[in-house]
Length: 191
Image (cartoon, rainbow, N blue to C red):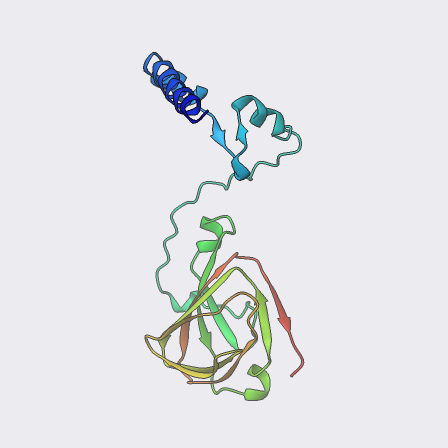
């Protein structure tokens, strides 16, 4: 019996070898079998039968083509039209250029800092947020991190929905903030 199995294995190998040597590359790839989990073999025909119909599969929406955004520093571009009443924002044109994929702006926090106004625990419903200190300093609190003093040249990221607040800042502070997506929700929490 053992001899018969060895012969059938050898015969099978020879048959497979003959089959593959006679076929071109394109035919080889379409004739291959895919090994599925638990040792089962699925052929191309059975895979096609298992695919959902075109109606059931939602294709990812293609993003519009991004364009170049150029922004030069001008003091008159700082506006008090952003999230915080104690800040001025200079939009860098990233939201428009990326069709809402991301937002970037320079923030000037207006001094002197009033902790009663600025120290409100909140989070942003974002995918990504990064802040870079261009000028001055800012003292923040982030859940899991505690208090952090960030000075000029310092940078941090805030994971999605992390609770945080501003504790204090210098009168001359300017921050670069990059956020994905451009439109997002901010939720203020009771302390």
